[in-house]
Image (cartoon, rainbow, N blue to C red; front, side, top):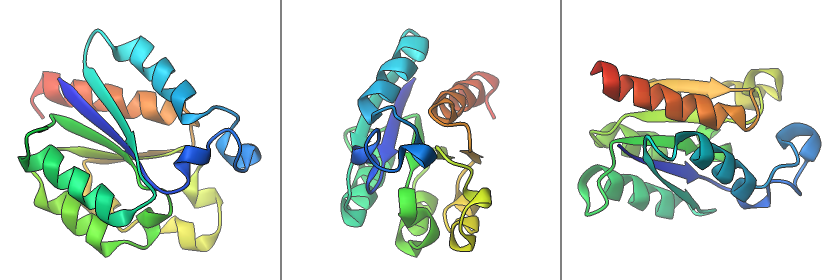
Length: 148
């Protein structure tokens, strides 16, 4: 199974940016842990961009391009709460997308309580720190195995 993990704006600063909210692990640390657990079950590609259009292009490519994927884990960062264009891109592709967040978005500022992408994702996981990524990959593997 081929899984793409897309990380949006400011996630390149993990480990430095607000560690009291996002933890002390870098994105590379998280990738290494997830790859160690699931590397024998899936080919996992990690990618990050601070640019909305690049994320949309990557979603399109994962759905229809030369790098077609079987599943996507998406931490859209703040675009989760603001980007109808990102929601439209997810809805346009025939690949299951799991929304993830390190923090519990519902225990934070009210603007973060609404996800524009959740209705077009097959599931959402938040609040478990780096384990949110583990849970998302596991969900995609189970979905593929069970044919859901």
